[in-house]
Image 1 (cartoon, rainbow, N blue to C red):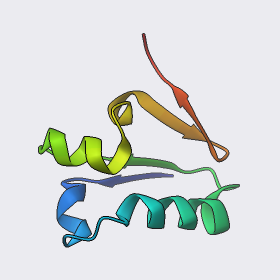
Image 2: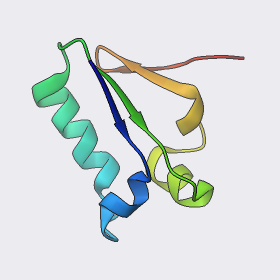
Image 3: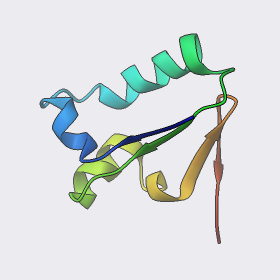
Length: 70
């Protein structure tokens, strides 16, 4: 299943713990499901703050984050 959240920064409502919340939900409820979660947003600085500088080039697989691409 593919889940795409476009303009993810708007979902945060100013809360800085959005990435932690997504991570906790992933670890506790979704981890073993066949799911690809895509977070996107046009505010690059905000996306980097949420996901780190590798945000657009990482992939979570079974609770692990790995690089996807060069």
